View 1 (cartoon, rainbow, N blue to C red):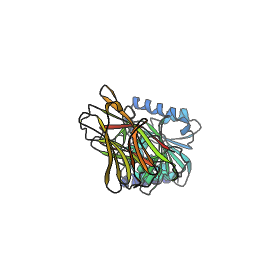
View 2 (view 1 turned 120 degrees about the vertical axis):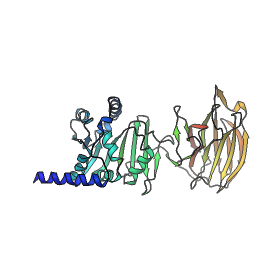
View 3 (view 1 turned 30 degrees about the vertical axis):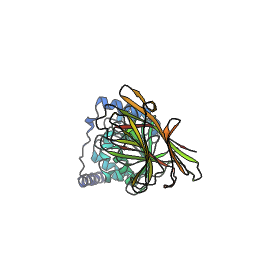
View 4 (view 1 turned 90 degrees about the vertical axis):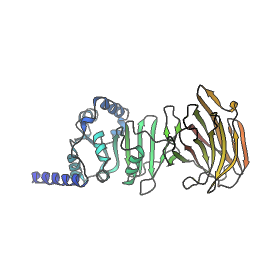
Length: 379
């Protein structure tokens, strides 16, 4: 009888593999000695996360490491995708509070098939924990979209101790806000751990960022920018009361005299209501032909309207070799708009055309100018 059941499960597994166009083998050989070292280094930094798992699914390359580090956990060896499907068919009436996918190869297989990933989501009552290897084929954004679309409500993505992002679903399509100190998503070129919760786990105490257009990236100096010749807009919301006297966003703008295009710009955004690239105030920085900056204060009430502008004098920005920078701020009160550098007011205009909100952002066209350390103050 047991033999008959095993044959039936194997037959169903093969049928599911064929239906979903899955290869039955795991490419465990792609986990080289070097990549295994980085895998284990990352796991070791976040052992407490994995210790919550009731079951850990491993591949041949990670089985011994899991056995050594988690001796009291239920460790399951999955040698190929057929066995992965068989595990689901055998356990589909079970519920694990935390299900761990302790193998980059298993995650590789699951994240390339939404149907199979949905099946495994149904096995966990609380959360599924996955190791996420560097992956040139699936971006961090697309992975989060897929996980939210199949039903995970909140996902904690952990890259390192100081790089953690929490995303939260807000539509059936998988659209999400993310809570972070910065508007950039973690790179898909680093090892990470994702804890995908079926329900909202807790309310984060950081601001919720979302990139509503394009992609914002962070360079090696932790500065934010868009890709060359591309447009990008990142938005965040802070607690706001209509009785607030003023709101302020400030940041450092950086550029280099080695810039290839010089036609790009970068902006601080305040009082954003949208949708899309509309309804906001924007303090925009562009470069002259000598790579010196000028600031332009715009409002968008459906169309872009220039309110005021000023070319910055050399004493208002700093230069070090070919790198130039300036600290700018945009302040919005009940009736006024002010902009300036450090403690100096450069623009001061009366304007009440847009409602005052606690929604701010950074906006880019191309990668000529970068923004670092955006900060928000509500007074």
